[in-house]
Length: 171
Image (tube, rainbow, N blue to C red):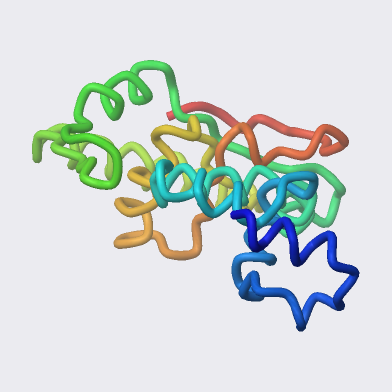
């Protein structure tokens, strides 16, 4: 960390610094005012999922814009508190070792509900995103991508403040 700080204060161009470029990119994306060495040290203690969710939240404008309808609003179907709780309770393990252990009957119920709700939305001419909490989003996405790969799953952190929302329902 000391050598990185010395290189940053040396006045050398970035390509001459002792901090590798990927580390500098991580520092720029995750914490623009922190030195790369501090970001690298922090990233060792955080999980890959946490880092992914952080970067996705920083890309909220692009994610919201990419999923905005032609009418200028972001159509969404929200994951209900009941399903949020079911996913939260079904997580086992710690950190990067977390896994979803949802009962097969519950999983089938979830899949059928998602299919029905998104088919209804498609019949109405809408292509909504599924909105979930940041904790549940990666696990919900891993299920959804197996039977509806075209459905985008996003968390509340990924909605840009200027996005116009239209809630089409709840699962």
